[in-house]
Length: 636
Ligand code: WT7
Image (tube, rainbow, N blue to C red; front, side):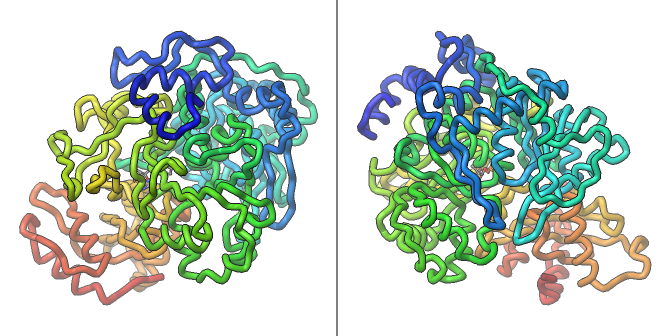
């Protein structure tokens, strides 16, 4: 780091932003040093550290071994059934080298795409680092997504290989994964796939066909030697699909040098990482960007020791997380507000019984943390002793953008406060004019990122126009994040949630349009409108309004049955995270004269509020009819 004092870091970034980023990038080990920091001659297409060459896997593994840290623990794995396994950096490197050779043996080459559909086990990290090591591009698909979702992601990226497991342990049971892969590939529906590599985790019976290969067999046969070569800084590192405002998820593309710079720098500075003494634990699944940046690349590039836990916080009971923190003496803990609110509801007794005095920094991510949850996190989990970092960022930003830095200034409950050094953000009104800061704070506006940053997305896979349109067209020259925000009187930033049709359920990002298209794929459904309704625990919950096709209903089951069937249908089409909390059958949807569904009014209904202004509706009686049905209630 350029300096020891936190304030100097802000000053250094302000004085020479590009020089600051070059210094951060130079904390990494480059196969060929870069001489150019940023090429922004063709905005919004950025090139960072363009003439440098680097290998992400080398930086996460070989480097530590070569610098004498091979025996340091990289991963403390805790399986849900209670099995444990520890990997030193040397061991993780040895496995990754074999896995890299196994991939090469299966015909995977630099630039090829590899889908990874795995539980939270060490092999998942090894798989990711092996793919990166040979310059292939990983596309991790969260294990909770359905076979349909996996198929569309495989096909969009034209992946050559899928790495999966027989299953993973979740809520005390073996959750099948290979089976879903088989379903996704059925009838040659993913023609680009040549092989499926299968890790044995749950030892459940799985059908192995000619293209399926066991991970342990492939690694046993593979050579243990593999020298990592350098790839161009802008070489693609991974694609990660995320929901936008349209029905089809976008493949967000990240490249090597800039991404790794952003992930490692932010991990060090935001969590105040002390490499040799901290025990770090981020509870995110590797299927999300948080898992990419703050389970895999950030902590490993920084040589941290981290806990990886396979299961859910309630297995076998709600003591589990706190037992893990006490057992491994976790000092930095990073989780989502949804989890905090779940524990708040259960009550502090499950936390209080454990010795959590090892904790010193607590992170929050995924959605705004409400002050009540912040205080509970601070007092009950942190013993009123820890620094809380509320970190705002996105799949697209690749790494944390807005967050306090421990001990740099006084934190506030519920505010992410300031961009981290090197990042410049703004809040603008709908015409792109910066909102006025006054002693009372500002009006709410749209959050923008005002200058390119190393870990920014480089594009939407296969769709360069969508990259420009979605992120760089709304406000000239600025990145449009899709979030509302305001400044308080001190100039600190308060995030206000999404301003588009993206909703957040337990910190997971879903698109209302995607759920609507899943619903209308069911033959009973003529039309559907989905809203995110306020939820005490999950922040938002999916509520769907559907118009049925009377001619398709046949032996019409009652509405409760219909609700059940459609909710399971969404689980099957997208995944359990998108399952609606409630489905309301209606005979009309509120539309403007131009035919646009007014979700705002449906949200009023879903949240039990009086319905707002209906004057722009083509037919205002529609809302009266929907309101009258309200009492039919939830079909949970
Ligand atoms: C959206 C991005 C970033 C990793 C996990 C989510 C919301 C994220 C915060 C926060 C308020 C937050 C935003 C953002 N969000 N962190 N600390 N405070 N809102 O990544 O799935 O790409 O979602 O999550 O709305 O746009 P993602």
